[in-house]
Length: 383
Image 1 (spheres, helix red, strand yellow):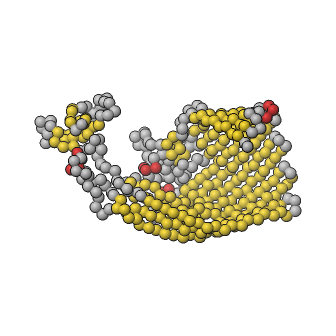
Image 2 (cartoon, rainbow, N blue to C red):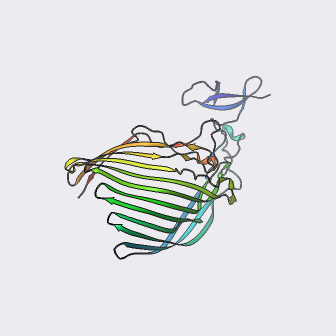
Image 3 (tube, rainbow, N blue to C red):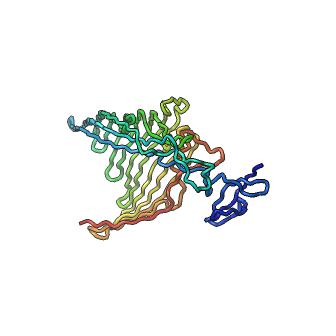
């Protein structure tokens, strides 16, 4: 009969140890097999590892070459109507090289403890590539109009049909509708409010298949968002101003396909890592005699989802920063800034290797956080 224990190996000699004992950082634990006499007769791990990494798995190379032609013009009708239009043609030639795996995996080198337990090192790059080439042509265009009611008030609208090239992968189409109003009153107010609708057709990217890290899974979906953008600068007195910029939107996900297979259960979800609300408030104090300025900044990022399945929600957070810019002379400027001064914990994404549907059944999950308090400075010399 075999019994399993965890022992600590140092210099290839086994000594009994309890797994929960606190040891030095140089200690390495291995899972070993014991016989009835409590003697080690084999190991399941090699210096704590149960397998060897795939050598060269996922090697890829890509090259893009593009040629573009574009033209734009703007003109006025009378004193109140301004029109503009633009056109762009682009041809993208792409080459994608995907490393091939060897038909037979390389064996573990002789003499290693684990060679008989895990005989190969896993998927191995064989030095050759599968080459894919593709050339894609697209035309992007836009047209906009602005109507000036008075010197202080105007309205505007725009439509744009564009694209994003993705090498040999399908091109993403981008469609924008927007309309808004601009208002300016002396030095007190300078603001604009814009309503918009943006569509992304065939948004594409690759991610690692959580069931097999050597396989790239393709994500293809249509994304859309409708919202309001607010940009305002308010200056109640000469030496103090407040700048506000914010976006309030309702992004949705539709027609999602994973490896070409439709996933209707995702329709209507919010796209991953996309907040519905984000804004920045920046109050600024202008120092007398044009010496410089002191400012603060509060940036708020609403909650986001770590996955397209909306299984894990990452909480909203707000970051506070301060800074000062000093004009030491006409040519010399000194700046200092402090970011995230209150050491706020902000999570920007979850675990991308868990896939498009994530969970936190244990109450814990992986996530990437923003940096803590940081400080920086700069010196600018104009000559």
